Length: 230
Image 1 (tube, rainbow, N blue to C red):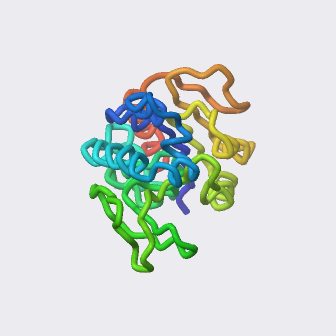
Image 2: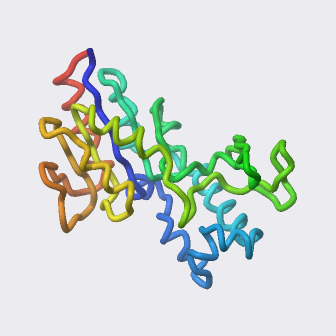
């Protein structure tokens, strides 16, 4: 049986494809607070503003291309059972070829209704407009987890981390909870690697490999593939 690899990815990985992090993207809109741009309260008060912000983020995400680290992570599926657990809302992992991706914070490629059923539909790069509704007739909004909303797939993600033979954390400084707590579920005997540009406190038992993901991840993955032939 192939070994299992779980990838925990964050915004630093997408930044290497030219996508700003949420806070950097919000910086372009700095006259507004995150409460106005990414919360249920902001949506209720200024839905047009929220749609404009996310329409811009979606267009930039669609224009971006998977980088060398995304492609290397997808290549792991040749020899391993791979699950990607990401805080990123773009679809660069999928476009690189990863087939099992859990999006903890939602996806820009989807919109959902604002009624009780939260009917979800794929929109890819298309903008969401005011007056655009889902099949049940409610206004569409970005299918993104906003501040104050519940992170998705945490139980499933923790089970994947707990059963992994290798855990690779890439592009996240582990400062956003509850997603950051997933590293604690890794088995004591699992190989654990953390790649980010810089880190003050590296979790216990994780090998710290500082530097850009596009430089660190491809050779790491190549070594894993050569040491674990299919």
